[in-house]
Structures are given as C-alpha cells and as structure tokens.
Image (cartoon, rainbow, N blue to C red; front, side):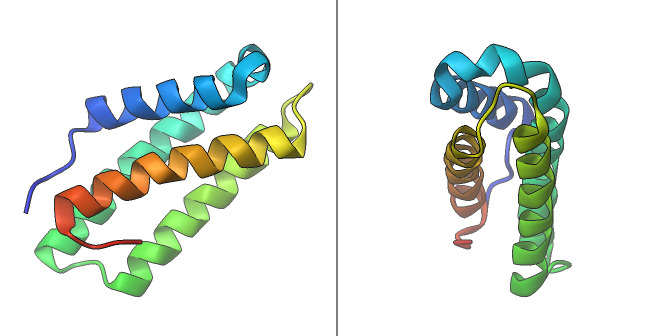
Amino acid sequence: MASIDFDKLFKNILVVAESTAEEGWPAIRDFAKGDLEKLARTAVEIAEGRINGTITENGAKALLKMNQNAVETVLAGAACVTKLVAERVINAVLGVVKDAIKAATGFAL
C-alpha cells in the first residue's frame, strides 16, 4: 500500500473546491482553506491508520464524517454562499479525498 502525499492532495482539494464553487469561491476561500487543509490531513491519517491497522473501517468513516460536518458548517456559514454551493463543494472535495484514501489503502469509504 502507498501513503497519501498531503501537499498533492491539498492542492487537488483546493482546485476542486474552487472550480466547484465557481463564482462563490472568493467569498468562501479564506473560511474554507483551514478546514479543507484539516480534511486533507485527516485523509492522510485515515490512510496511515488503515495501512498500519490502528483505524478500523468504522473509525475511518466516523473521522471522515466528522470532518465533513465541520467543513459543511464553515462553508454554509460563509456569507454569500448558499447551502447548495456548500453541499456541491463538500461533495466534490470528498470525492477527491475518498479517491486518495482508496488509492493508498484499497479501502473504499
């Protein structure tokens, strides 16, 4: 199994978030970056934990869900952003995160 390259994952997350948010990105960028970075770090931790056996399948799902909720709250709370845009962004970003975890571990979330 392979590990996840944090820098590459975070860059991909930002690209997907920006392209998905479209015109709403400038309004949420500063709010979102910190939480998206935390989400990328959590993905690395999940992959490493699954590889070395310290995180169970249910634990991995719970960690990802907790971070998803945190990012959704930040995005939805940002001024000028609708819930629909926030949901669209988090779903696109989670696709990138889940693909990275699966590529590193073979474990699909």
